[in-house]
Length: 429
Image (cartoon, rainbow, N blue to C red; front, side, top):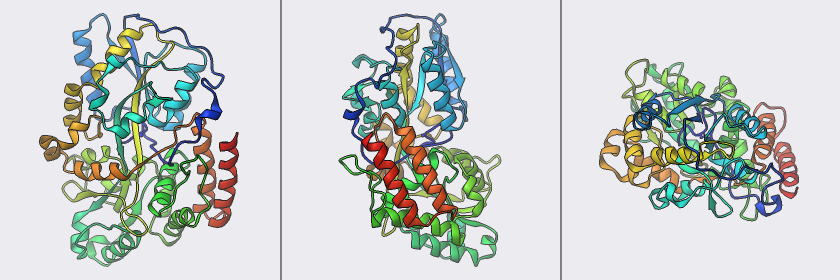
């Protein structure tokens, strides 16, 4: 959901898959209608188009396809609410949507329940995509969703404040982050500026931030066998960082309500030294209208316990609804959106990192978005969320126990032990 991966919520991370073999091929979902070659107007269910770039791409499509026009339907900004709306639509086999934009982690659920259709190889050249992004559109070895947006979390930091404090480079560790904030706080310019914030409201973004903390402490939420590992010393060290940071003010108390946009606004208004978010923030914070930090910030990989941290691989994919009456048009529209010319156009108009691999080495793109090499470096070490049909239950369980820990309702050891038991139950079911 780097990128603002998930509508506005995002976005997104655990580790490896929770064995799908136990889930069955279609998880008992409703049988989907047979694929069709219907053509006609389509509706595209997607997140809020903050930059209005998608509307321009749609207008170009509509000009070339007057009898097959596409209409954008914006879903709720909150990722959980957006998913709920899509699920309700699919459960009643509604043809209200033809193309659906899915958070990368929803692909398995929608494919297993036969709510989206396998895509033919002619939709796009899969060799053009970032490999990790392509995997998020796969279910049981077949492609069900074309990767569109991808990325991982990065650290935004105030270059002007660090310079005033004599800090030469962005922090690579949590200790360095705290030390930099302490030095900034002693400067006149740093008075009243909070240290650091990510996303800590009780939603998908908290799952992402917790998972990144665990990974950045050398742990993993699930191991390669699909077993939860949240009560290991490393995993508990990641949770302890969040708890301590909330307690000592490294993360301001108000950040307990932060989703992507709340944190982005705080950073853009000059109220944070450091901020963990997705790539979409770059263009907005760089805008001269309304941004107090334009020209005063840069981007680095997120820090970790003993060195650079590990982010979560986020992203949005495009799929064809199994209940669409105009699936041929829907497939053609997806081909258009993910094609290299359109991705190039989209990439130059906004700062969402895209799935086309060539864009990360494009000199013109790097000139426009200098953070791209940093993003690519972060993506190389980022870990995906699990490809699991019951992911939403896994994420909700994590949110419950992590919230209890960071709000001081449970000590870290207790929260970790109870989370381990709960996730084990989900994994075994």
